[in-house]
Image (cartoon, rainbow, N blue to C red; front, side, top):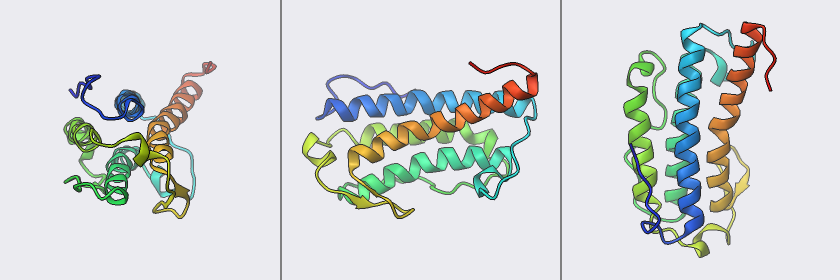
Length: 164
């Protein structure tokens, strides 16, 4: 388990976002496992991330790797050695190991990022939207939260309960 210490970062804002990212990525995996164990049905959509529960899992965890790779590329930091597009088949069995590898890479690669590096320049994301580094870090925190929320809503619907 990655433990972020207060003195290990040059920028407290980056430390906070790395910590939040780890928290919500782990929470997503727990929610995904609950949804998978009950065989929750995903909505029919053109979104390829929702082709199956396994595809959704690889989408969220793979994006975490790709967000870090993007940040390192834009800041000219050493590239993390992460698989950015894991194959869905059989991925659930190694998801926890992949998760820890991604979170460790976030911890190691972002320690030296300063406040000046996070908010001055906007770069084009791989989906064509400009982001500064700070905004991409925030996006990375929200991404697993959004997908966990969607799964929670599907679980509540399946269970016939209201989601608060």
